[in-house]
Amino acid sequence: MNKRGLQYFTLSEIEPRVWFMLTGCNFRCKGCFRPARDGGGTLLTAEETLERMEKACLNYYGKVPSEAMITGGEPTLDRAYLLSLVKGLKEKGFEKIVLMTNGYELGVDENYVHELEEAGLTEAHVDLKAFSEDIHRWYTGKSNKPVLRAIEKLNASGIELLVQTIYMPGIVDDAEIEKIAMSFASLNKNIKYRINPFVPVFAYEKVTKRPTLEEMERAYEIALKYLPNAIISRSCYREYPTPPPQKTWITVYPDLTVKRRGMKDQAEDRLSWLNHVRPRESVMEDWKKEEWDFKLRHSLVGISELGEEVKEEKGSEPVKVKFPLALHELTKTRETELDLDGSTTIREVLERLAEKYGEEFRERLIDGGEIKRSFNVYLNGMNIKNLQGIKTEVEGNAEIVILSWVSGG
Ligand code: SF4
Image (cartoon, rainbow, N blue to C red; front, side, top):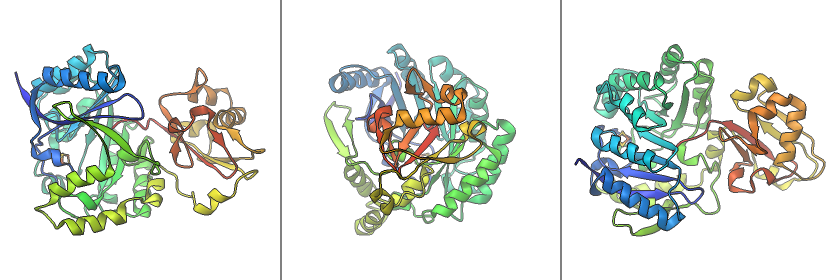
């Protein structure tokens, strides 16, 4: 039986969802920020991993969740292990099984994607580090040809695909993003493509600086010319575009000890990992500057104008609503304003929008009185799922952003 190193499971406190953090990686990305790439953890077979995951979830949630995210390190390194893991998850009733990968092995082995689909994989998030072979080799140590092949294979499969690229000023910037977007447009213009910013603070090598808001927005506009489903984002900000009052999660180690951890614990892990690369003090210094970067977080999910002064004024000021591209054909605009008479709720705002944009708008967005899973609604930067959902109160001067298909790990 093949074994893989398991660093820990992560259980979401927001909704039942489990992450598998597998160790080891076939790339050596210069800007890697994942200690798991260097191996370690507890060696387990897929069956042992599933057994421990089940115990961890039953202890914490009282049930096995329906969503699993398999990440690392690089989860595809051992085909037999991964196939058994995915198959086992499916047998246990998981409905959404997501693989986060650099794609390399999926492109090397012609049957891998097909076998994963057969096993029950529902979604794959592939990182395409660079389009130009020389940049890719320099940054990761490997060719990008297998990665591009994996993207082609996934695109042709029934597995939902999201491709992501990290914007690195001066390395992978506008020119590379344009090449990627053009190449994907000829493959499938509806491909889901996300651009994330390079974050140097915990990067193994600080190969460049963090992109500015303007650079990110420009990259987004470039990608959008070719790919209507392009988005700028950063996965860990997905559920919290602004920092929540408390951001913690549950870590369950392979011996089933449990710890509620937060950003500080994660930073500690990364600090010890980077210990031999650069002095702790310099990383700490950088981290303080990064910690609560409101402006950038807003911009990353397309929320740019929420200012402190806006929060102060409430009441009868209009509410601004921004739409995702998926709704533009109905709204014919990227954003609108609604005049409110005192405070109201998200439900009421959506009703008003449906009156304005027609039944099809309602059908596209709402199902059984709830917002469809393929959309997320943010009120002043907070996902309404983390507030009172569709019953969340809205006051004048608020900003509501509707995003489509923002999913994944
Ligand atoms: S593929 Fe991911 S885990 Fe592996 S080296 Fe690159 S960033 Fe790190």
